[in-house]
Length: 482
Image (cartoon, rainbow, N blue to C red; front, side, top):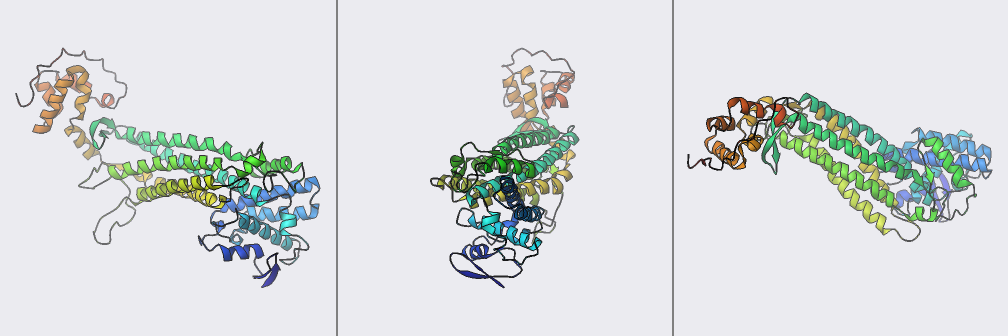
């Protein structure tokens, strides 16, 4: 053990720990989530990027000796590379507006820098976590900036997975383009469409969500580094804000900009609500798609049974042979969690007072978890479900053949009243609509075949010429009268 001291007193810290007394106190004070911040590696690596940019700016401005800045820079590079992830041990949910997280980073970086200098951990007289690593900074500008950098990383990763999932649905749309099926509205039979159209629509909606998420990224680029405590820049050199922004852009590759009003930027959490709302939109729409997949695959004998999801695991401890749609189900649950997280972010953003929002840790946890879970959900849905979906073509063909919904395609030619009467007759007698139309003399078999061609039923261009609308047939006898 080694002894470290702060303004409150002294604490024993494990000798081999890179973290120090402030982290040790946080471990005591916040045994809440039992989840360390290292569960979000992007956040840890973003902290390393922010501290590295600060060290370079401080060295450039001459407020930090070059040798210390180089040691801090090298230690930050190790943090960004993930070599010290396990040392970021404070809980993700904490009081103090993220001070414990910032101090955990300061201590880890300081002790790694001391190690690189050949000094023992805890030798803060040589290089100090606050005086050196935290120079020109405050938790109040470091924490939200690091969170925004981490969110940029997370959004990029989610966008990649979302696009792969979109392509998987698009490929299935091509594969199923020739398969006719019955469309449904309000869970009732509607008009025909192709299974390919259904899957293509899934791809299109995911593409829209991809665009909406991409639009949020520039909002995350704006940060308040240089604001220090409340936005006035106290303890920082006047040239620090532009310098640290320039270095942060170079380190992360993102187009970061310093907020025009640092006081406003330090207290405002609007961007986090914007991202949270967009994530909720994407998650809920994906959940709706998963609902459709579960419905379309329901059965296999007493349900829709139109598609077959890949069997992933035994579905019951009591019913032999049962296989459940476990992959869509887990994505549904991810969506429920993200919707709840959006409420949390909204309440936390509203609860901030005056020049600081003290509730950014729960905002960080909510957003980082939502991004991580949604990314993982998109991946497992693609790999373990969508890519392996097959169509039950025989059943789909049978349902289309028995459907009265196709009569809708004939209404411009035989009139609504006649079409409705034929639909009732077909349902009552379990008859084929096409046969009834021909038998009633309203259209010829050739005309019916043209009008009920797959391309026309699915709303696609047809090469056949339009058939003239017949005169009104209000006198067409109803089924009971026939």
